[in-house]
Length: 181
Image (cartoon, rainbow, N blue to C red):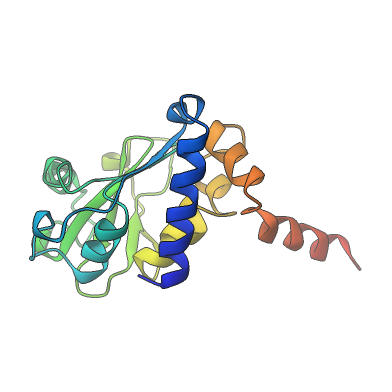
C-alpha cells in the first residue's frame, strides 16, 4: 500500500470519527488490524490494506475486515461459468462488495474485477471486467475518489463526504477540460 493512501485512510478515519454519530450512516474505516490477526496466506496487497484499515464501509462499498473476509468467499461459488473464476476459484479472492455484489481480486496479478450491471443479477450476467490494476488504485479512485459515482451514485452520504473532503476535484477538473474548446 502506498504511504499516501495509508495517510489518506487515517485522515478520513479521523474525520469520520469527529462527525459521529452522523457519519456512521454512510461510512466507517476500521482501525488497523493486528499483524497476528491477518492470515499469512492472503495476498500481500490485502494484508497491507488490513494492517492500515481492518475493513471499510463507504457508502455502497464494503471492503471486508479480517473477521468478515472468510464469510464473503461464498460468492466464488456463484460466479458464472464464462468467468475465469469457475476454472480456478483458488486464484481469486472476494475482497468486498458493491451494493451486495462481489468485488474480486485476482491473486496472480492483484487486479480488481467485478460483474458490471447488465440489467440482471450479477451471477446471471454475461460480462466480467477489470476495474483497476491493483487494490490501491481501486480504493483510491473508486472508493475514495471521483470514480465512486461511476459505480454507485452521486446522491448518497459517502459521495457528499468525499465532496466535502475535496476528493472529487479530479472529476470536476475533467468536466472543465471537456467544456473548453
